[in-house]
Image 1 (cartoon, one colour):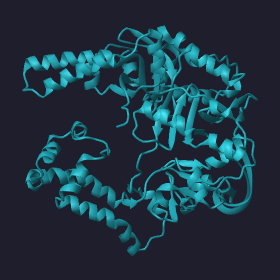
Image 2 (image 1 turned 90 degrees about the vertical axis):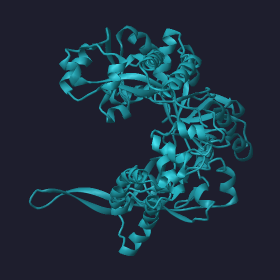
Image 3 (image 1 turned 60 degrees about the vertical axis):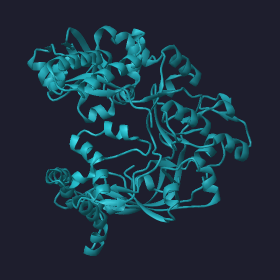
Image 4 (image 1 turned 180 degrees about the horizontal axis):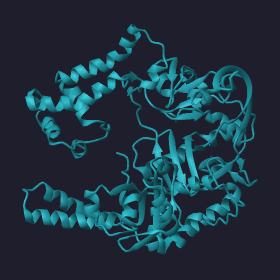
Length: 546
């Protein structure tokens, strides 16, 4: 089983409530939990920096013991004495996991928000000032504030040696907000930072949206087919990780398999790294054991774990060398983290949304065929098929989960009862509960949430071509225009798939991929069991909404 994310408690208060309380609130974790004003946030680089400031790590051994005692009491007969003990244990858990130096503010009153940005606010005797707002937080109108007393020291650590005199504020806000991204800590790699590869591709047919004005002066838009030359950053946000180092990260993440891709976070660093044997590539194809970085520094290829592109390292221009950056990271005790990684096994079926269907011209027979797997699934659950019903009620279950892991993830007692005695599926009360659970899915199916043979995988630019660029070779790649690679579909002898990326609003965004399967691609892409590898010569990314 993969290592579990550590969740810390943070107060989340609406800006309107701050205004109503004259920007001074006193609230306990218990009351905040009842008010839904205590939220769980995954561990991140900012939290790591705060713990480092106090020179205090979370005592997970003690935490585990307290949780065990609390849960044992929960399983006993209810009594006032047990309730008091459970509450005492929960208070201890809150003390360990509460990140009191950070408060999240939900901006529902702009005037109040402007006030607290300028003047701060007080919660439980601590004064807070604005700290960070990542892209994900901005989408949810949420901003993080930090204890004013530690602000200067934490900011100095997180700026990581930078002395920036001029920068686009919105970009800096997004880059700094990365510190609040939830991550699982992994060991620090040895990195070679390379430039981005910008290729000009010629004579590409595209549907181009044109703004026009009619004879009456009314503005309107029209789609024209154009043939254009396009300049593309073909490896934007992508890097390469060696198989050897990927295995070390698997140890850190407690994985029993090696993902093909990792979504990474480090100080001012984000993006995805894909597993590729660039050391073998250097030996067999580039005929060298040296690689040069964007600063002009040369490295022995055996001393490199990850090749990053400058689009992944947002502040590369503000450092004289990558070593200067590393020295600052060591000084400020920064960590590397993984936010996501590709699955061990991709789903055989996934849910569509209405957008995928409304952009297609389907007749009644085609729509019936597309809907049939969903109809069969619903009918088997409603008829009491024990396997289908249990799988539906349990939700997603990992292959490596034991019975205790499954039971721990079950929130309803009636589901646990069915696991122990499947004859209960014939009970009238249980049947009603199951139908109530699936009724929402039935309504969703009617508006396009259908099960279809397919899945969601990461998009990868030709990693062989990125290795060519990294070693100064002519960039060709293994895939020509209109060619793609997918280990998942190749294993099923599928030659064409419809690739869609949400949000999808036009038929043109249905991108039919032609899958290549030969010895050369299977050799160099073999670590990418999940993920779809795209050629760098087409307009796929434009069709996928850039």
